[in-house]
Structures are given as C-alpha cells and as structure tokens.
Amino acid sequence: MKVKDKVIVVTGGGNGIGREIVLELLKRGANVAAIDISEDALRQTQNLAKPFNGNLSTHQLDITDLEAVNQLPSQVIEYHKQVDGLINNAGIIQPFIKINELEYKKIEQVMHVNFYGPLFMIKAFLPYFLQRPEAQITNVSSMGGFVPVPGQTIYGASKAALKLLSEGLYSELKNTHIGVTTVYPGGVATDIMKHSGAEGTLKTKLGQKKAKMKLLTPTQAAIIIIDGMKANKYKVLAGNDSKMLDFMVRHFPKKAAEVIANKLA
Image 1 (tube, rainbow, N blue to C red):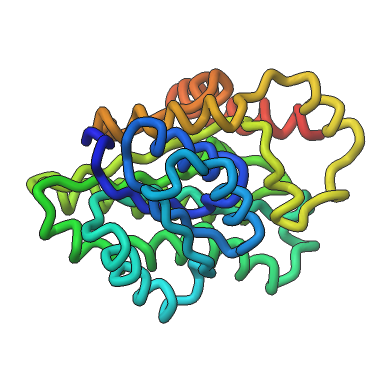
Image 2: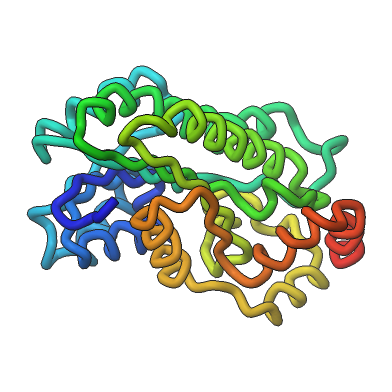
C-alpha cells in the first residue's frame, strides 16, 4: 500500500522506533495518528514534526484500555476523515530475570501491552479498514518471538503470540483488500529498557556485549518497517541478527537456542 495521502495509525509514536515511523511516514506524504501512553513523549514527537503538523494528530492512550481503544477510530476519523492503516509498534520488555523470579504483575503487564494491546487495536480498526479501497495492518513482533532468550521468556512468549495472531489474520484476510505484514526486529538502539522499567536488571557483562554489537538505529528500523508495509510483505526481518537467527531457527532450532543461551550465560 502506498502511504502517500493515506492515514496511518502508529502506536508507541512518542519515542524510539515509533517516533521515527511517524516522522518517516509524514516525510513520505502520509497523514498520521500517533498513539502513546505518554503525553509528554507525544508532545516531543509533535515538536519534531512541526513542518507536517497539519497532517499529524496525537492521541494519549493506554492501548491496554479496551474502552479507550474502541473510542479511538472515531477520534482519528473526525480529524483525518478516513483511516487506512495501522502499525502496532508499541511494546515493552521484562526485567532480565528468570520466570521463577518474575512477578505475576509484570507478566500480565508484558502480555497486555505486547499482545492484548495490538489485538484491541486490530479489533477496533478492522471494521473501518473493510470499508476502504485498500488497507494495511503491520504488526511489530520481535526476533525474540521466534528464538528463545533466557531472561526474556515472557517477552518472547508475548511476541510469539503476536506473530501467530498476525499470521492468522493474514490468512483470514488474504482474499480481501487488506494486507497484513509481520516485522521481526533484531537489536535496535532504543530506550526500551528505560521505558519498560527493566533498567538495572542486566549483568554488566551482557551490557558490554550489547555495546559492541552493531544495532540498527530507530530510523533504519522505521524505514525497513514502512518499506515492508508499502510492499505488502508477509514477513520482514529487520537487522542482520534477525536474519541470521531466523535461518538458524528454521534449520537448527536447538542449536539456535543454545547459541543465545551460551551468549547470555
């Protein structure tokens, strides 16, 4: 789906990859409804998008609040007059600890933000997409959704659930005018640890390893995501690490799990 003159809803639009998706879409001539739980973060995005502010609306919203999400489509349409696409980008990680040590409250939060939030958004907007000449749903899963990462097991489970939700939705909609794309980013240099409340839970050794890795920038990730949506790709692997581990998981699944586990040992 070409993004020019389309109205795209982007969750997590206040920071990181989401903010860069918003800015890149605006540069390409799209109209954008940016969603974020933080009003201050949305204000910062709006300031960065000043040349395009007429094409941008911001909506402070908790995507796990079903009632608020159900009211969102009418708010977006009131401002933009239509809605053509959704990028479910918002997500959080868990503290880097094992399941045995992870509190149920945090488990529920991760599942609600990473799975139920996108599901609520899809259910809210899908009836409107069915009325459009063409529409696109893009769900940002994770490399952690297909390869196990010790200390991020619940995060991985939530992203794996989003993966299957997205693939099932693709199959249900394949004979319609609505495309569905699933994106699997690898390492991206964002503040997700800070925004997820997971700072201070990584061992120093792991932190040093991450510093040496060549991560995608949020801008690079945003461009890959938008290009994948534009091309109506079924699957988008963002980053060389994601591509490498996808190959390993498909051909040597146990080995892939062992490689990750050994690196984090």
